[in-house]
Image (cartoon, rainbow, N blue to C red):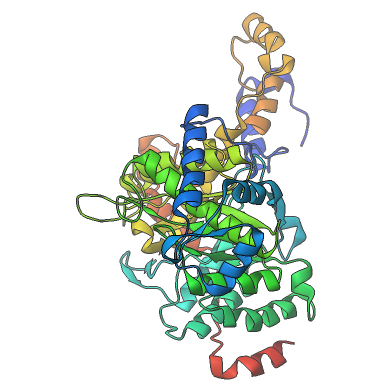
Amino acid sequence: MTEISKETSRRSGGRAQRLIKRAAKPVVDPCPPGQIGGTYKPLSQADLENIFDTALRLLSELGMGEVPDRLRLDLLAAGAQDGEAGRILFPRSLTEDAIAKAAKTFVLHGRDESRSIEVGGSKVYFGTGGAAVQTLDLDNGTYRPSTLADLHNFTRLQDTLANVSWYTRCCVATDLPDNFDLDVNTVYALLSNTTKPTATSFTLAEYVEPIVKMLDIAAGGIGEFSKRPFMKAHISPIISPMRYGEDAVDVVYECIKHNIPMSCITAAQAGATAPATMAGFLAQSLAETLASLVMVHAIKPGYPMVFSNWPLVVDLRTGAFAGGSGESALLNAASAQLSNWIGLPSGVACSMTDAKAIDAQYGAEKGLTSLAAALAGGNLIYESSGMTASLLGASFEAFVLDDEMHSNTYRILRGIEVSEENLGFDAINEAVLGPGHFLGGAHTIAAMERDYFYPSLADRIEPRSWAENGAKDSWAVASERVRSIPPCVSVVVRRSIFPLFLRWAG
């Protein structure tokens, strides 16, 4: 491009130059993932200490129930004590030892190592979660049962989205009624369509080893996956209130055996499986997530575990899930603050809108809850992309809209850099004594590239031009973006042919 003089840039050429620069890739990404959170602190220091103290009292005086025999022996060997009615009590010293020896940071590997992320500290990453049984159909805008083809296509779509830093299945392939077939095909869909860090769940412990064999093939040979695991497990070993779930505990043991990092998720519901008061809810939920940590500590101290304390809210009038509520935003932010204060890699949930359509309710609830979780410093923010209808639904359009929302959130987290150059004393003098404006100036151009995010979906044109371009709403614009990505052809691996599939794939 030829050099443009100052005089020319002040006239029509200046606008052309700005348009060229705007179309080009920014020299500096103004809002990359991994920004620093933690400025929003809904709890005071005294609040944190009181909630933590109550959680430790619950574990030491009430303890955990329905403890599987194998885990009971390991807990007792680690310093737990037998309580009444078969419950196991965790002395304060045991819980504090588990916290002290826990992994504070660790890497979630991608199959492509350049897409790996480090979990812990103050960095914030948005990712996925959920198990939607319905998908918002691209063609008719109504919900239908989710299928394996949907899972492949969701995975392919999110692989193109910069702000989904790791991918967990967002929907359940309801056309696969056999649980083993479901678990195998879920993993295969992830392997086939993304190289980001991934996560899955295992219905039963016995499914882990055969699926690891498939992961070994993708990793390059027997035992290779365990050396650099690029898939973590989502497990809910605690059933609220205050008891273990045997099947999930068995999965924990098997994952540790195969070196699969874990998110141990507590998902109590305020007023249903946990107290309706927010302080009481946080105390119980923290105690339960700490019980997962002590479990992992008793099996293998320091094993990588995301401290996934997800407060869920229900509408106490109807019992309906209220994932998009202000209370949900507040509680998940408080949970992130608690986890970070304790020093554990935190996982919380957000963007769990209760809206069914891509509408004003959708945008308001997603924006409110995701920003609160990020500002509070949640390390891994689950459910943050694609989810609708109180986690019962998933939407292709929602994925691309949420990705742009996350860019704006990261820009907010990045904050304002105050420096001699940015304060602009010389630029102000130059503009006032010269052209009388800042358009096209070097100081403005530098800030434009460095400090501003330019959306590709949100509409900023004036109303007449918008009408002339078809008066499209965000739903329509997002639908066009999704349709620009070719769909996948899904392959079904059945239980009966799985051994043959492994031999063929190997």
